[in-house]
Length: 490
Image (tube, one colour):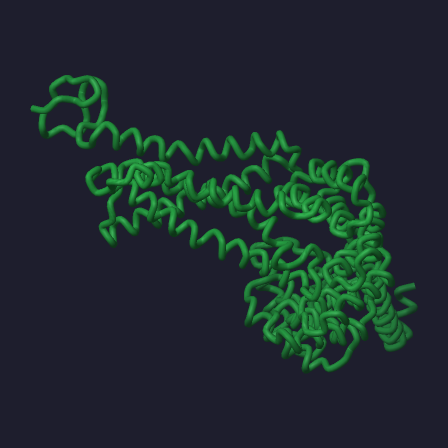
């Protein structure tokens, strides 16, 4: 017999649970409580993130809150899992609460390093990120965060283990100050990180730190709060380009009520005027012009950005996409080729260049080869499978094109109007379309086709060509009919 640790009643030695209160008798009470705390924490984090999203006025607070919560819970469980693995492999000291401490420490350090990132960014990248493209800028931010977070997280894990050793073997630590530090190791490093970030923040100039807090709010998707901070900062620093840039971004990304795309474009233009020659500013400004369907200005600004960083594959890709969207096929071909020069394995650019060549009727065999390469690098995706099928059709290989189209529609009744149009053209070329004119009329009647002028024109031209062929065929059939047959029909 043994006694239940919860209610104290005697329990048979063969039982794992108390027959009176249901408590586990195979594990210490403290261990069970720590385990309950560990598994309840993710639920608490989810509720906390969603509630904070509502309080901060985040766009789509439930979805965004769940996204943030998913990230934080992943960090919590990941840190606890890594710590458990280290305990198992290296036999380092641990307590029942050590796994929870490891997860909580990782979350606290994550938030502290996030604040530190915004203060280190001007130091390493400058207040205005010159000579760096959009993708490289994001990569640089990730690297700054990783370089600060990962080593501190590793030190923190060691601190959690040292704390466990100190509690299990008090005689191993003689110093009172060291005992205090180890006991509070979970909070010590995040607090030191926050203090260091705060020192950077308060020692920066007023103009430099005016965009730090709005930038944090923007990264948290709290667009309304970010805009309020930016407007307040602009009252003092109306000529600070990063503030105008941030306001333009917030309006475009968040689409808050009371703001128009033209206002975002105006602030981005102001940022470019105050700080010319910044590729990221020009890239975002071209996107703002595109939102207003001002294709000529969008292409011109995107070309300026690509010219500043001639080796940036992404900026050339962006320029090519804009040229393709506004049917400037020659410019699209040039831009996509420049992008592939610096990143030849980009499956999206290979697909887009292949499609552009098909649309212009140039180098159809080369377009087919690039479409195949795109599918090899990114298999089982509709957009490049459709391009491959269309390239095969244009090269006269309709049987293979039909096989690919059938694979696209396997399990789907409808994909997109453009894919449906390509499918109809392939079927028509193989005399497998029962009612061609009715099929094209149905496509033209779809609202999404009417909204896309380019696609509507393509389908309309194809329908006109089909109607002309059908008319000629009927005229030939009428001419070949015997005269008596025509009289009887009348």
